[in-house]
Image 1 (cartoon, rainbow, N blue to C red):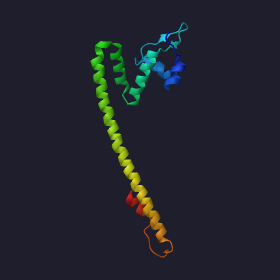
Image 2: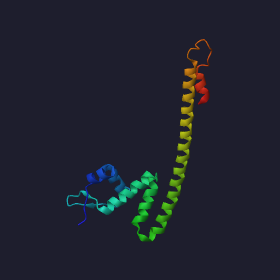
Image 3: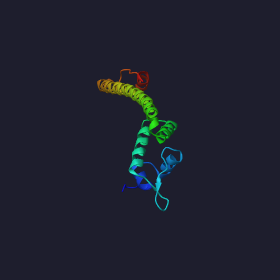
Image 4: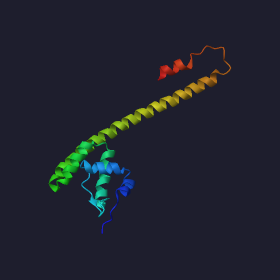
Length: 149
């Protein structure tokens, strides 16, 4: 017999709250879950597989409305396989574009960090070379820093 998990067990395994699991069921992301004799939800392995996939979609920032549309297609059966594949292909295109944008942003951040490291080293060496020359006029540090930002 297939193992059945309570809502609390599923919540612990997935990181979702029991409230979120009930909400997902209410809005159609999760098909109605089997119930024990006392009416408590009992999640099967197939429910867990589906919830894990929903979490992947959520991680990739698929809007909940699209997740609902996908779940509805899934519930309609195998005749919707081409539509589901197309939805996922379109979403993957969006995900890959977001990854590329994040990669470019990370490169820009890395370049700025290197700029500031170089600037810090330059300022530190200027400070060391200035020791003993207290009478020389130097531009205030805050003015120089503002100009380099």
